[in-house]
Length: 241
Image 1 (cartoon, one colour):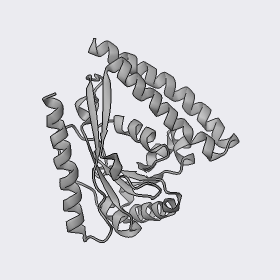
Image 2 (image 1 turned 30 degrees about the vertical axis):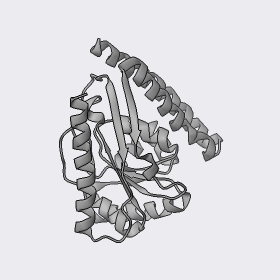
Image 3 (image 1 turned 120 degrees about the vertical axis):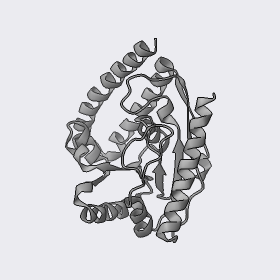
């Protein structure tokens, strides 16, 4: 049954995704941004509901009061699954992601990402790309949109720690905005490179913001210990649920 339910969710996922993306690419040329920016919110909300009904995956949000309303913050999140992308679209309505630049060239997905004004980065270009990332992030700050970055640069398995990239500190240092650490355990239910979705409750946890002004070592140690220790605790919580 797990296999059947997982395949059914996947079919619904793509059946909703590609027609909506194609329609969205029409809207970006014919409607104001305030209209088409709502599409990821409704799409994500719909899929979170389908995920609950079809695959039995619910979610719980803890510490959302730690977000700072009306102000751009840098949300630094553990990344274990596609689930958190859906959740952030739904919870924040109009988030700005730091994304691999290659994704902007994937039709029709990339066209819509570009229209939503995301922050592309090409890691092979090193410092040049990091500087461009910072400049783009600075241009986002007046909008009040939360900026989301996955500090490990890729998804990791639940219960696994990985090295954080330097880009997260550069954004913290140069943009002079608070950083909200985010822990989760989504990989326990929707694992990387796995078709099977396991029923249960994903927990997403926000922690108090780290104010600007810390040196690199202090900031990185505090950020990593907060996210990794909490994600490990959530992983163990899921195992014993």
